[in-house]
Image (cartoon, rainbow, N blue to C red):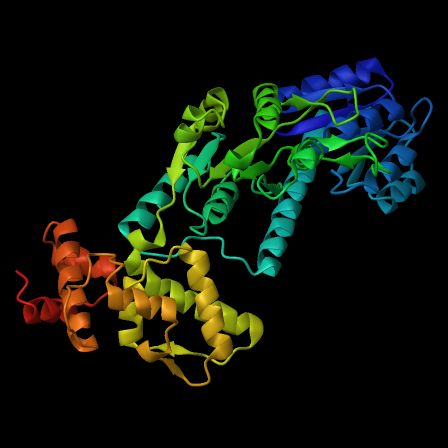
Length: 455
């Protein structure tokens, strides 16, 4: 629901516009002066202003100038009972979206408001799109594994709602990508996704970081500063590594989440916000609750819709796709020479556990692009930590290597045979489903199954 602020010193005009706009389904607030409007804007940011030019005290054009000087200002429609061409042109030059005269036409007000809101929505979407294109970040999960497919289906269901989400998963699995996908699929996509790494902020600064502070609130606070909650108003707040937050801060976070109200550090004015919260953790929060390190009430407040991001060792069939994506993206970004990975190297890489998950895999690919001088990476080019684990049999996505002497060809065959047997069992013996799941042509897969005598 769009929020509109009506600024006019005539009470009857304010009431008339409120009635028109509320009948259209909008949420409407009022301000009787320019000063009151600016005070209102310190606490919240509406989607649109209807602003009278001739106000008692500060006039509408001065208010417009101050609004346009802010960050991401909303569109402003100027209204006046003494309109003329010169006034209208002046208002448009100062940044007004449109200009309408009194007595107000019901039809013109409605048409103008809808156009302004549509313009604002498109502008926000364009800003968000430019930010995404310039960030060079991955905003979708890559993979065809059952775990990724299930996770994407859950994201698709929860994203359009306003439900809060708690994302669990090991470091490097892509929890922030999941948060971005939820935000991008929501009605808040045109607003900001504000991320906070709760583990990276010192305890003495986290309140200021989250809630903002007033000038002079503490040593070094030379000016007032908005916090993450304010910046995320009408958007999404992503609290990463929520399990690393102190119990003291957890208590304050819980109050804000319940009331959607807070005060800046050193301030007394209560501010209201409308944020969707997505939290993420690499810890077992139930164990943290048991050990007295995490509040149980906060846990259940956040856990409206829980999601689990699978570790890379549980989605080994996605590793080849991820490598291809990273090679392509890093080559485009940095001008690296294109690099292939041999089939034997890829098989070896799928057997490694990747304790650092997707982040570790990306770093490995980038290192190969920088250091490798040829056109193809073979098993002999793999780092020691990968080849060492293969030799000792420490790692097994689909089972350990058997003990005893075995050359690389035999190890590859052993892996393929075991991998196909298990995947076929997961697909209930359906070869077509198996071919789709692991990305092979059905005819080629059939020959592979036959060569290993897999029924």
